[in-house]
Amino acid sequence: MKYLIVGAGFSGAVVAEQLSRDTDNEIIVMDERSHVGGNCYTERDTETDVMIHCYGPHIFHADDKEVWEYICRFCDMKPFVNRVKTVSKGKVYSMPVNLHTINQFFGKSLNPEEARIFIEQIADSSIEVPRNFEEQALKFIGRELYEAFFCGYTKKQWGCEPDMLPASILKRLPVRFNYNDSYYDDPYQGVPAEGYTEIFNRMLDRPNIKVQLNAKFSPEMDLSGYSHVFYTGPIDEFFAYKYGRLSYRTVSFEKNVCEGDFQGNAVINYADGEVPYTRIHEHKHFAPWENHNKTVYFKEFSKETMPGDMPYYPKRLSDDLVKLELYQKEAQCLQDITFLGRLGTYRYMDMKEPLTVRRISANFYD
Ligand code: UDP
Image (cartoon, rainbow, N blue to C red; front, side):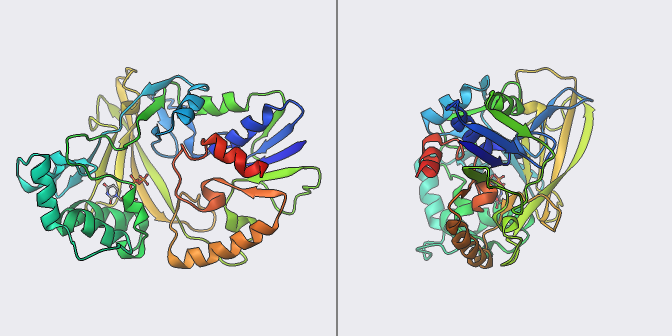
């Protein structure tokens, strides 16, 4: 069988790798970029030799042992716990909200049970089922913590009022009543010793996989020679935006290089609305097993995606969901094409999701 896979990010690469196990299959992976790996692409900075996550920080985390073991077949995964700090009104706090954050912010020394009771008292218990991001935050942690850490950051990050955003975005972050300051809850967390690009090179290095870079897909292409197409590009672009554009946020980075250690941590968020960037990432801290005299860091800015910009975060506002349903209806009629990945399904997705190999296999063998 001959397959076409559009996009060499995680979704495309995993499907390619799975299909390549049947040596009779012939697999073409095309990507419009000049490299594999999608937004997970990493390369060494020529000035500092630091491994850079070129499209923003990526920390691999998973709760499924099978997913972890799968990715570890393609790289030397080093344990890495992301311990994010956030700056609010000139003070540095621990993020996500944990016992340290609560005690720092309120100038207290509560124990776990006392903190739980305290937060219960200040949280908005009148909200039963939160309808949006803001209500979710008020229900979880109350107004003061919401305004200090989430309101300004979220307006910068998403370019809209937090009450327009789904509650699910906030649910990505835990609230903890202990001093666990790991950004993620997942038991398996790490960063590949030699970056993410190596994973993709190894996944795609099969005699029956051909990778075509700088190759942009168009639905007008002759697809008749393929048994099936796996499309991981934006679903609205596939249909030439006939029902309108789905909204995305895009990010841009301002690069800086200096001697030594710029901020002493991999990621520091800037919660205040007045600070134009959302966060600063200093990439040598993602690889604490390496030594570098110089350092490279990036200020991250968020903006609405315009035609030509790279779509990063699906906003999924109510208008978007109406359009998405129309696109999905059309997609379902195309028997020989599967839409997958963050852009193909228009979902906020962590790296572990495309790696849930069995689910993907079930999806395309259905
Ligand atoms: N968020 C926030 N302040 C923070 C960190 C996160 O307001 O310091 C909000 C923001 O809206 C973000 C969401 O919580 O989009 C989810 O955070 P996560 O870190 O999962 O977002 P990511 O960086 O992966 O987009």
